[in-house]
Structures are given as C-alpha cells and as structure tokens.
Length: 162
Image (cartoon, rainbow, N blue to C red; front, side):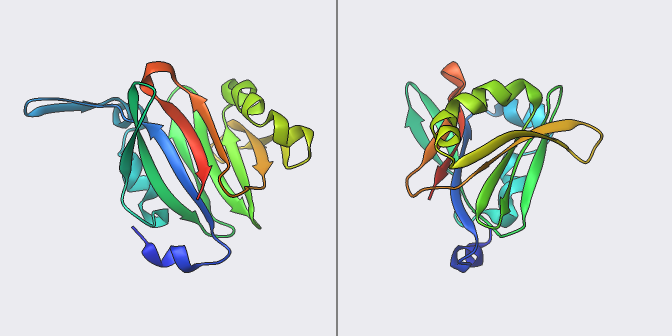
C-alpha cells in the first residue's frame, strides 16, 4: 500500500471493483480469482493502493473494492489465462483501458455515451508486450463516473472515479 500516492496531483484516483470469489468452509478456503490469475489481486495492485481493500454489497453479491492512485505514465496489465490480459494506465490524465478482444463489445457498450460525445476514444488494437493483442479505449474520468461490466451472480468488474 502506498498512501503517499494520494498526494500526487497527476495521479488518477479510481476504485477498481472485482468479484469476491473466496469461498471459506471451516479451515479450508478457495479463491477462484486467485486460481484464474495465479496470484492475489491485492499483491499486484499493492504499489498503487492508497488504502486497504474493502468489500461492498451489490445486487445479492459482494465485490472487493481496491482504492488506487495511478501515477502519470504508469499502469499495469493483469494476465488472464485463456483470454489474454486486462489492464489500465494513466496517459497524461486519460485512463487507458486494455481489454482482450473478447471483451471489446462489453466495454464499448459501457462507454457508448462517452464515445458518442468525444469523452472516450477507441477501440484501437495494440500489442500486449507478450505476443498477444489487447484492445484499448482512452477515457477522461469525471468525478463520480462509474463503469462496470456485470458478471451475474459473481458481481462485477469495474472502475469508479474517486
């Protein structure tokens, strides 16, 4: 966790929301997201986190919320087995979202208003640095803006301007 990032005026402040996939039965536990990624999401996001992860209930489920500050010129890509990668970066105050080709239509639908009025650009194909392709969308965040892809009973994967 890096609370000092919260003071950086060029950092984008966002909350990343992801499904809570941990199942606990007595002393045993299984985390589906950890199994899919191969690591804890909080471990990867730690250097950009400006506060502890917390949970929030939504429509019959629970999501994990990761408060982040993304420094200018920084970001990350999370490799996801079988689909490529999902990522984001701060490009001079614009949030660039990186999604695998299979998610393009879902993201385009979430950004339809912003794409229509020029607050977002994309999609554009780019190399993910590991020989695969990602599709990028660039977005200017507004205070209170929230974009999420619903994942049914699992919750959602989303970003909120903080």
